[in-house]
Image (spheres, rainbow, N blue to C red):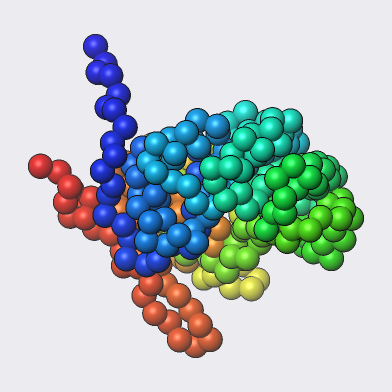
Length: 337
C-alpha cells in the first residue's frame, strides 16, 4: 500500500549562494521545502516579496514566522495563451478567485505588509489574445482600487504578460505599442505602479537548437529525417504541438526541397519536431537549425530515456563561450547508490 506523505518540515534546505530579491509561489501549490527555503531567505533579506496563490499558503507561511511583504495572486477568470495547457488565468489551480481577494487582503493587512496584487492570463499571448489580456487588466484595475480603498496604497499591480513571439516565418511580431496602449487604458487610474512580465518575448528568439542528421528514411507518405535531438532536448512540439522553424544549414541554396518529418531518437510517436514540412533535402551529417529555442528550451529539457542533455554555447558578437557543458552518462548515474 502507498505510504502517507511525510509531515511538513520546519528545517530549511541550504539556500543558494546568490541573494534573493523576490519569490513567487504562484506557479503551483508549493511543497514544504520551498516554503522552508524562502522563509529562511526572507530572514536574511527582509525586503523579499512573496506572492501567494492560495489562502492555505498564507497560513503555512504564518506558521513559519513570516510577517513580511506579501503579494496576492488573483484568479481573474480570464485566460489566454498559445495552448490550453498554458492558459492560466481561468484555471482553478492558479490564484485566488478575484471576488475573494479584497476580503482576504483586508484580513491579512494587519499581519503582513501587503504590497501588491498579481494575475496572469497565460503564456505566449499574441495579438489575437489582446481582448483577453485587456479584460484581465481591467479586472485587476478594479481589484486594486477596491483593495486600496480598504487597506491603503499598494506598491504595484502586476498584470502578468507572457507576450508571444512569431514562431512561424510569416507570422507578424506582436505590436508592443498596441499592447501598452491597451494595458494603460484597461487598468484605469491606480496609485500603484503597473508591472508587466514579458516572459518569452525577451529570450525566445535568442536561442537556436543545432542538431545533426543521423538517418534519412523514405516512408510511405514522407521522408523521415532522424536527428540527434528530440523531445528530451526541445519539448514544446510534443507538449504543445508547437511550431519551430527548421532550416538545413548544410544544404546548398539550390538544393531540392522535400516533404520532411523531423524525428528524434526517443521511442515515442510524439518525438517529432515537425511533420510534413518543406525542408532542403538533407544528407547524413547535415546540420539543422531549430529556431526560437531560447524560451522553454533547455529549461524544459530532460534526461528521459537516459539521454544526457546537450551543451549550451553563448555567442556575443564573434566571441563564443561554453555556458553549460554537455552531460555524460556518468553524470546521469552519479546519484545512484
